[in-house]
Length: 324
Image 1 (tube, rainbow, N blue to C red):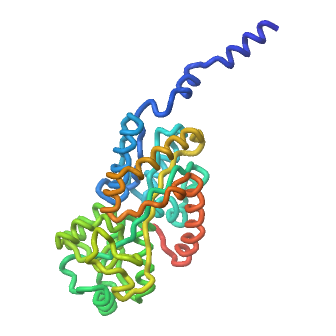
Image 2 (spheres, rainbow, N blue to C red):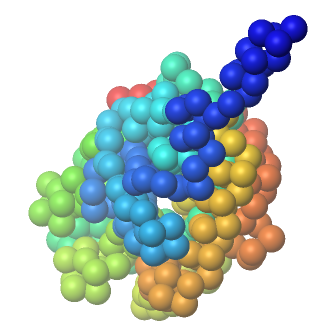
Image 3 (cartoon, rainbow, N blue to C red):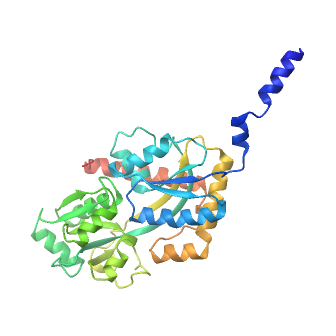
């Protein structure tokens, strides 16, 4: 009897693993995986958020860029990580919704992740190389119709928001052009500025400085209202393509089985970060709209992601879009 009691006591006593788990989270560095190269909108958002989380948690928050295959390599690495809160997956509608209709993924976008928070959304910008002959969106559509299959549009990868939006643009306008996939927005933008490709349909924050500097032509923003950061660029409604609205939303996830109290701590820190005046000012400047506080819960992100899957998967499959 005494032996049994002793054995039970030993089983309940805190061993090394239990002691580590009992430590207040976080007790060491956190890694935030960005599934694109450095320099794009997701990477920029990740670095802004990571800096604020570092202040809150008093621990390093390391941004790791793991690009390739439309973001699936980086998201896959996060899916395989331990569910302890020390590896996070920051992504978009492209990486956490659209890829599911394009790839035979070795992970489940819903079951293998714990939602933390929706981070915001920004409209896309239709941009062209500065030497494009078209001066506005109507002229661009006319030029593309007169020159079928002669133009090229860069994308951050097959099935990304820019690619899907570009494909829908072709359908809505009756135009034809080639898509050129890159390993992220940064490399695509470099070639667009250099005049190696003709067009892009991607988050507005990627192009603000280049449009302002005259390095690119900003044809239209895919929103109902003009961007405060770039009021000179018309909306698609104003530019002659009414109703062609699209946005890229961002979210943060942890691997499955991450403890609920850790998810709650991460969510609280993210909500506080997005409420911080310097962060809000910077994100507003980039064209990112932060959701109301009641939409920043893990449950809200889960519902939103599910609704987006139900919306976009049939569209992508019906259009026959495949990975390049």
